[in-house]
Length: 150
Length: 250
Image 1 (cartoon, each protein chain N blue to C red):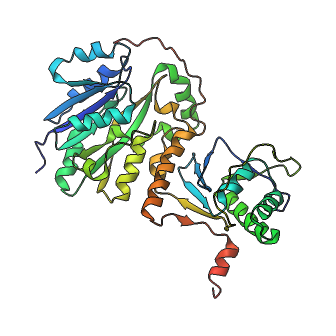
Image 2 (spheres, each protein chain N blue to C red):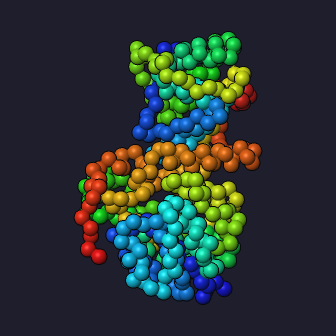
Image 3 (spheres, chains in turn cyan, green):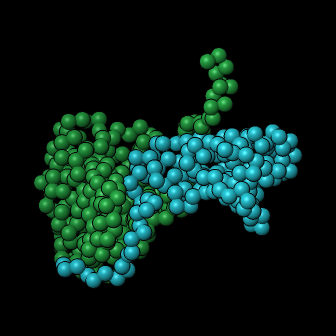
């Protein structure tokens, strides 16, 4: 179960993500579903990617936006549970340590906003069987094949 | 009646000497007429120009600097004189009945603007180990499936005035972006559940070079459109506790 020491792991094979104007955009490459995390989502996603525990995320947001940590931790836990239920992350090793050296994206929002996760399925049919697909392109590729007969 | 309407068949090609003849021959083998064939050579540096020259006046050739498939397709659309437009990539093959079967759908449904078909992938020898592995895995990529790619598309030429042409800023996935934009505008679309396109897997497929960033670029374009239009789309994900709060009397 989730607790404040939980660290989430992003699956780089399965999920592609980008932070755009403070919002995180995620796509599950295996099923073509894509997501947005609005509010303070972009920053939270970056912290998850850098191995922060849920408590460390709440600490960081609390300091950044001067809001009570208890308010933030509840939002972070709810978001974590939604990300898990959508298979966008897995639970990692709580004893690992966060990568606090890497610079985090400057969040464009000036105030804290509860992160909201939205799912979009309108392009799932189009993405479903179009590369990149996890597990598809790991066969060896010969770069200079013999020309076929013409 | 749609029968007898000209279809412009647009083939973008970049260094396609290995398979372009097969692609073009599958167009000329179509049971549907009349057609015109427009080949846009996107700056090939191999033997493609010589192969295209052999087709003489049977094809309209245009050569441009290498600008990518979206720009090549768009150039073809500019040149098209047909009421309908279809696309084939230089490494893929149409079933001989492809255009005829799709035109039947347009005849039967005058409201139709876009018709796509199922497609099936096939593997050249250099990727045979991949084919074997995917078969063993019973992977859906090995089976016939709806082809949301340009090669299956037959569209009224006029739909490009409404939806716009292909987004040239997208390196790979411009077809997905176009289908998404068409869907947002409510374009009338039909998926014909017949395999009429065969997509070749070989050592140099452009789409197999697609990266996660390419896929993200299509989604980013979608979010830009959403923001510009202030449309509210998507399904808010809620947890069970939030649902309980939303509906206190349930």
